[in-house]
Length: 317
Ligand SMILES: NC(=O)c1ccc[n+]([C@@H]2O[C@H](COP(=O)([O-])OP(=O)(O)OC[C@H]3O[C@@H](n4cnc5c(N)ncnc54)[C@H](OP(=O)(O)O)[C@@H]3O)[C@@H](O)[C@H]2O)c1
Image 1 (spheres, helix red, strand yellow):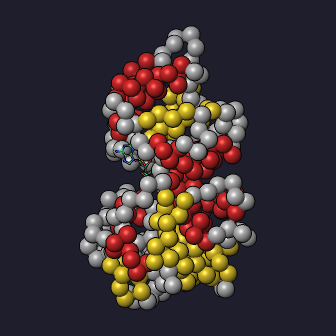
Image 2 (cartoon, protein in one colour; image 1 turned 135 degrees about the vertical axis):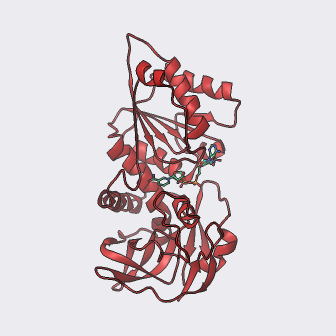
Image 3 (tube, helix red, strand yellow; image 1 turned 45 degrees about the vertical axis):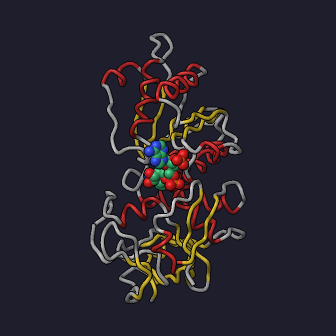
């Protein structure tokens, strides 16, 4: 079969012949039609992701849309080395769901991974309640834009988006924007200003690194001994840095709960349940993402392409 193949970790895949995917026990072969180029796909293909075994050659792709028993399905691949960016992949049948009627296959392939991160972090990990306020760090990316839409769906009263490419947020319906290309003092002031207007019940963090440090610095300065407010920060991505400096005093001076959302902190069954729910909502037109379709044969050239606020989806003939 034809597939995208990573032969050397860290280098873009080549479109080449690869031996057909063979189903193991409890698996089925799925004929693939579309697979999203999500950050985790690149991270695994480079060997850098915490779930990556680092073995090559490998076919990248964690999920996508394909055909199984003549039906269109969303499926989550079951073997790391036999990913979804190929004519065929292998999956466990319980991890393949019929696409809800009316959902465009490219939209489904684009939205499942970033949308799941938004949906699970807000609904499951933060347990967002209607009327609560939300800050999204990295609201300009595909996942961040979906987090804005999901927070609205879940009844957030106030949504603040922070990012660099803030043009992506102009029509998003956020209540205020914090521009992360501003000088650090201005960013800290903007966080402080928002904190003085009632603070945030929930922070969904796709960035980590310096923007998170600046937010937490502003949060620490919002200290009031007589008016404690609780904030649940959910770490979801690390686009701006792998680590942060976390002063101990911060955890004593404000009521901050830190947790994360991802494979491992959320069991796979719940991740896939969240995706199923999300695809239904997307089919109703209540969540949307901009898609850039690219034929899989162009994988090498498209691998490093930065499509701001859009998800590249490889189409497979
Ligand atoms: N844990 C999970 O379940 C899960 C699931 C999906 C994604 N993620 C993670 O979430 C993050 C975002 O994913 P995505 O799908 O939205 O990717 P994306 O569409 O490529 O967006 C990347 C985002 O990172 C921002 N960014 C990159 N470098 C930055 C920097 N140095 N400083 C500030 N912002 C920076 C971009 O900002 P601008 O566009 O404003 O430049 C954009 O908002 C990734 O780290 C991804 O691995 C986690």
